[in-house]
Amino acid sequence: MDGTKEILVTKKSGLGYNTLLDGAVKLYQPEKGFRVGTDTVFVAAAVRASAGDRILDMGAGVGGIGMCLLERLGDVHVTGIELQSVYASLAAENIKLNKCEESFTLIEQDVMAFKEINYDVVVTNPPYMENGTYKHSPDTAKNQAIGSISLDDWLHVANRALKPGGLFVMVHRADYLQRIILSLGSKFGGIEVIPLYSREGEPAKRIVVRAIKGSRAPSMMRRGLIVHGNGEGGYSEDALKVLRGGEALRP
Image 1 (tube, rainbow, N blue to C red):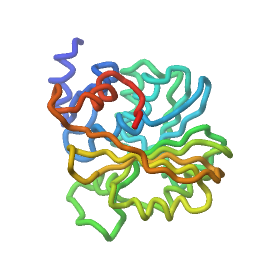
Image 2 (image 1 turned 30 degrees about the vertical axis):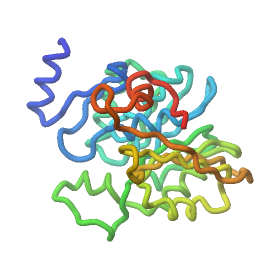
Image 3 (image 1 turned 45 degrees about the vertical axis):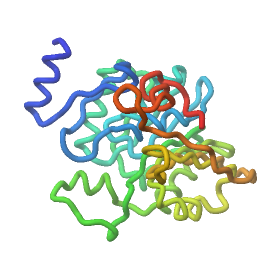
């Protein structure tokens, strides 16, 4: 079945077919609800890892972050944990589609029930809202993806899963920065905040946060990245290096 037929078939079943990293990563995802976007690529591009590292993706969705990590880093192993069957089943299909069955393990489970430890890296694009802070949608799956558990609980699981000195990487809304810093608390240090500016001169709407478990290093606000400019597809030259070229996020 060629690529064109795949797109036609998935559209009939309410799915879309998309690619990331200039076609290197292929994904099936719902046409409605929570969808993979630039946040997925940027947070994966902020991960630093060595050969053989074990990486946990909390709230893996359809597997976009994990696929980007494997494409960028090569010799690592990704474990993705996803609660919702609609996304987990698509992630399983995407693992086969990208031929990474040996390097990507998918677990369909509630994040709060996850007990594995000693990961080198935890990466996440978590629910951006918490219950009681947003208007619910008729789409139940979208509601769970937007907000199901608290940020404190989410970061508690990340801390538990990481080995001492392990790296935590997250993308989130910029207006949650204070909450994020408070939630990281005394368990993490060496916190780096990387603003993602939609356009030059505008406030950042998203941030990428990196932190080290158990570190006492000071926090740092990085220069950040301007996402949109006059380049191809409306993206800035620096953004295209990450989104199309697969380069690391170097603020």
